[in-house]
Length: 119
Image (tube, rainbow, N blue to C red):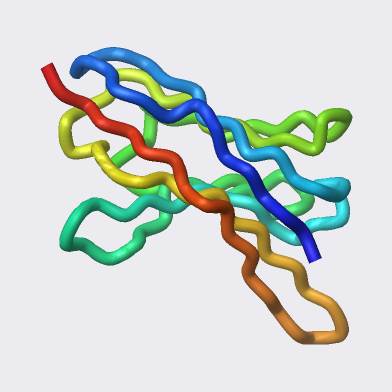
């Protein structure tokens, strides 16, 4: 199991930046993949970025070149640096951890943090 706690959301003007943090309750090196998802009002939750154990990173097309996922193993924390924010980035952002053991996969979620982009 793992508990995830997000922080860093807030209100920012278009073109601004925010950095989200996701603190895990266990070593993130033992987690198969960690990523960020978001859910805007009236829409389904969507993938923003995911980092697989071993280093491969995938970004949604809508955030490529603007968002960067990274991690600090010593702090058991994953980050999402968001630059050049747009109003359409407004959503609740969720941290996700996927742990696979003996062929079984389980997803864990944080409580979410609100990101609002508006002038």
